[in-house]
Length: 223
Image (cartoon, rainbow, N blue to C red):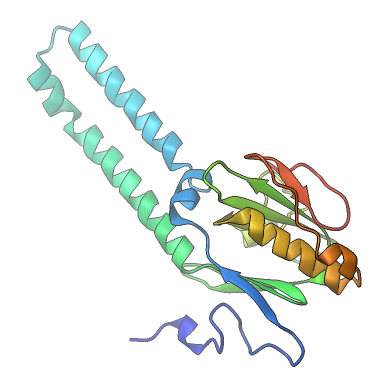
């Protein structure tokens, strides 16, 4: 059985790299981090927990037996379990079908569960890259670019920086070991810009949700 990705000469890339261009890094989002930060599965679970708690409290207040309250809560419990399972499964699919690639000349984002999309972001169009780190070591790497052409926030979602609707920023979401990946990208951007003395400088250690920035200045990354 084949799928649309079987025709990629290199996983995550629509064609072989041109001569002189080097593959520096490839990776995919963390499924668990995608579930939490992209699909907000924690908030959904908390919402259903509040509803179930309210059902319990209201039932006890009305004088219903615990057994009756449990029976009456089965539909809501089933809905909550199904919703969380669907979101977890979608997060897994999103992570599995997304590949981020950093080469010596560009960032490539291939994503899409039903309709695959590949976006090339040349280094020359990137004027800053902000890294937002999380406590679990994952993070988001947002690329501030000069021009996205006809691409909109909806075209890029979920691989876009939150709340930047008018001028969306392509974003490597929920990347494992984001600090080192951000440092690698920073070195590659400096090297491509002809600043080898900066290309070897490591990115400073960052606390969760703090930002580190590649060339072009910094804008604090969205939480």
